[in-house]
Image (cartoon, rainbow, N blue to C red; front, side):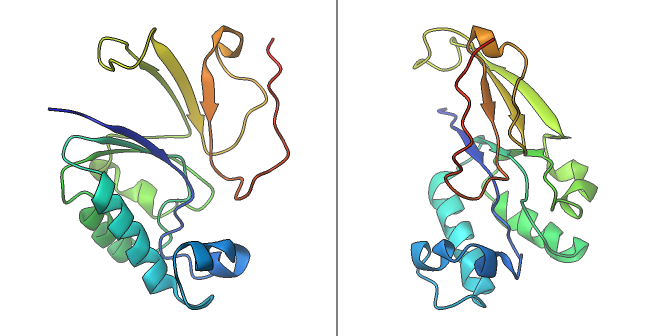
Length: 165
């Protein structure tokens, strides 16, 4: 069975103010205005279910769900209904999600994953990814080709550092 791996950050499900801070989401998601958080969340659920299938792995790089505990649990059941495996890399808005460690494959501040070429036929070599909600200036094996994946930066930030050690 084919297994996909997805990386996503800053979904801000249930975050009532996200559309005030990120107005570009309104047009991109076909929403009507800054108060359309229910349609915002529905758009995310629809996109998720159109792509994520049974046994797929999803790495959420923070700022996942901003609801109370009861509503957070409902959202997690909605997103996991097809049997995907979710790893949460904790962001600054993930207080309620962290309480449901039984719903995640893992919860961590920083996640170091090596993708093996024998598991993914498109890889020429093993590939290491260091995940964190926040961008890092340096990380393990940066000079050997490992990748830092992060969220938190909600735009095309000019902060880019391609320098290697």
